Image 1 (cartoon, helix red, strand yellow):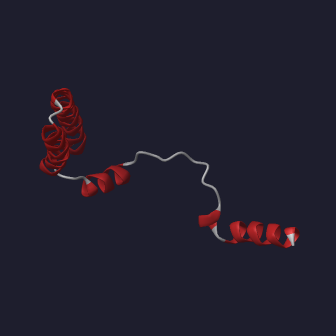
Image 2 (image 1 turned 90 degrees about the horizontal axis):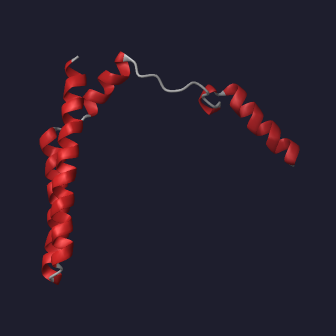
Length: 97
């Protein structure tokens, strides 16, 4: 039974190239970059999602009266907004090239 399973698995990978392991690292080609730019979310959508996520967490902290959590969330929101804006600027610059 073990031999039959080995034959089944080995024959399947030899016949179907999709099942064979891909040892080559992914390549950042022009085609890959074009595919990424088509799938990219808009700057506004990303920042709206960030805002919505933090607004919900902030409202929960506000409802519970947790001032330290509110201050922590406020700082974290501003920091992550800055990070996203930098990353989005880099993405935009790469897409323009």
